Length: 135
Image 1 (cartoon, rainbow, N blue to C red):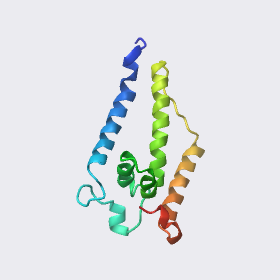
Image 2 (tube, rainbow, N blue to C red):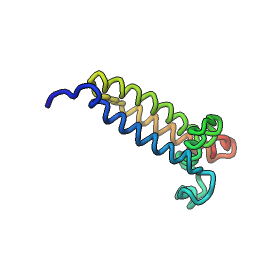
Image 3 (cartoon, one colour):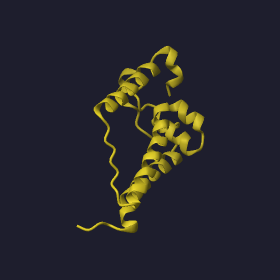
């Protein structure tokens, strides 16, 4: 199989960008702050505990409408994730254009670190002193 050239190599990164753009456009149009548009978080509904994703749709809505403060307030981890996604996507696009694959090989310690950050974020946002992190 020969190497793909030019624009053909950009198909997958551009397709992913189109899907993410479509999802953000939908969330930007259909406000998650109005009840009845999206399902309620099952963990929050059953236990009253905020999961790491709680507030993510409100964060995406605020982000797409340009209110970064509200986006960060709704879900700080998700908002950081939007910027991380953008950086990785640009790296992917550049590497695809050059004909090189995107390889992000993280050592197990990094994955444990990500898990620890999500766990700490979840616990802190559910405690009284961490209410600023709650959606």
